[in-house]
Image (cartoon, rainbow over all chains, first blue to last red; front, side):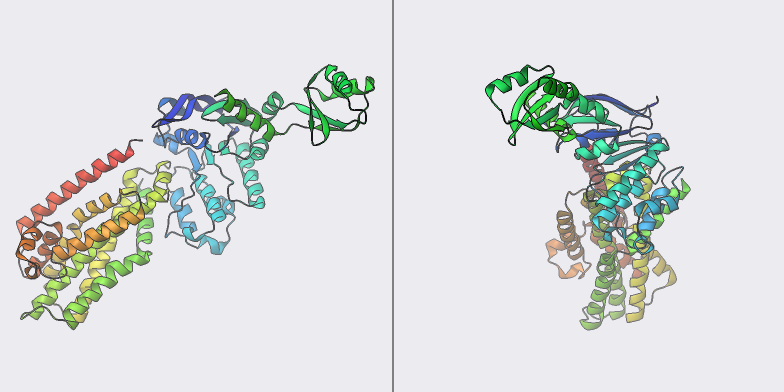
Length: 302
Length: 246
């Protein structure tokens, strides 16, 4: 698979503070990659270095095999930054036209206008008069003005309502099908899980996990069973913990919980062993739990 | 490439003329001053015709100097603080074309101001100059604005809009008063008059004042203006280079 982005041992320090610490990864053509992490983890710094807006203190960034600042690279990328800025005193339509003129093979005007979802009267308003959400839609259209092969989105759905958000991700999937590569940052775990086919989990400037959402979940998340018992006793607990494939046993919300890698075998063992349990529930591990675990573990390690 | 330049120039032109501050600072205020000091209080002494032409040049240079320092400078700061300048960095538009567009918009606006204020002088007081005087004074004012545009880029390097507008306003007014644009420098104390002769604003104004008196701008006017242009350009390049290091 064609490598589009190459990040090789990247570090970035601001004065004393290390914002990004030896991060390396490659991004392949056509993938949708989420850079996930809590606030201040170094997501935007990482993205800024891919965009050539910041120079890494150490390491090399290559986009399409070239330096990010190369004009050939800029003609093939589009970006939506976190700080939505609109040029003032130009009408929405004029701004889009202006941006199209910057690129050798711009996207169709009609397509971009549809993408903004703005009404004809809004298109004739000054860009700075739009609402926050509308401005984000406009900046999405501007990111796509050059029909880019690689798209960077920094927290793209902040300030969008549910409908706009759904529409936004639908467009992204459509673009990905056309072979475009998408890199976005988010601290919404659900969003990374839903939209991305690969997650780079960043915590305190370091890459702590890299894989598909499923891989990350299965690696970290232990499934758990919870139930009630009318004959709860230390002896009962001992029998429970002695069962194969149970990792630990604890109480939560008045229920007895056990964590395991394999819920099926635990269920089988409980029933064949005739343990007095009722109201059994299987809790699927959630990505946000995995996320918390990962980032917290990392904090403890430091 | 040609299309990029055209689109950028067109966009900047639209933006500048849609700016309401422009109308007030660059047109309304100088024309109002002109009306007050030639029609309401006449301070010109004996030769009122000459005063009317002289003061017309004062107000035109005052207008163009203002838009060069303030409009230009503050817009640069605004574009940076709103993140627009950062956003432009990731587009393939070369920085030179972006700057060219800005200069084009600014020049068109200056031509428009000069024409309109000259017209106001003609309509209000029937200022009559020869065709070559109108044209050469207009050109002098247009080209002579370069050192002030360089000051504008210095203002544009400031971090906050508030600071930039405060500082540029103070510099603008001080230069206007001390350079004899509001009142001829003869009314200033002797010491101030000596200082004035070295200020960019006096040399800018004096070139035009000489033209309406049938002379050419003095060599000192040209040399001092060029000197300021070079100094401010070097300063501005230096500041910019320093800011770029992240």
